[in-house]
Length: 229
Image (cartoon, one colour):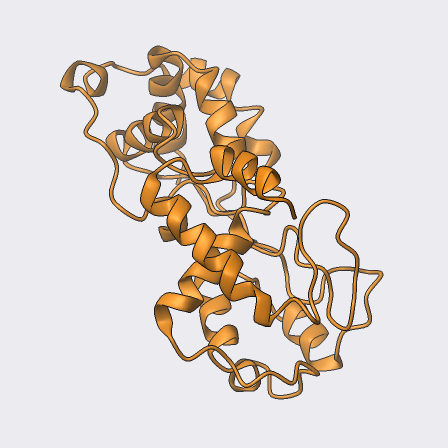
């Protein structure tokens, strides 16, 4: 990938300077993976599968790549490449999946693993780490004004607005790579959406969604999802 391409990607995926630095460190660390895995626009399978969109994806899910039977089995049993599982796999692949064909001794340094994961997350093609997981919120959210938190959301209006939300998040609370947002505390929900709108949280899809919402619409959504058990 060109330096210009990475700069444009970072402008979307990692707005905070600390995040940009981590993604850049992850790009450098990823070189040890690049002989087997490709990532970025037009990436294709090599010895290993391409890693576009890997963050939040079920293990062994790409139909046009021949995975080891163990990876496919664990994916069918519920293994999803979230932040925690990627850390474990990068530290020692065979500890997490004993029958993996990935002959790689692992990345022992925790900070280096986190940087690689940040780099992989920048190429996620769906909002699979929203709204509460650690990778999108590494430093805590900015405080939301008390007047905004005091807005009484209309849950019926929130239900009307929720159609876009439930294309990814399940109303029944199911969590299969995309975190549940049902039963959330309203203040936490409002704070998360405002953090995306301010581009503090680094998920491009959620940033676009939140940018289109007014304060009253965010409050309505928060009220609607809070009442769902």
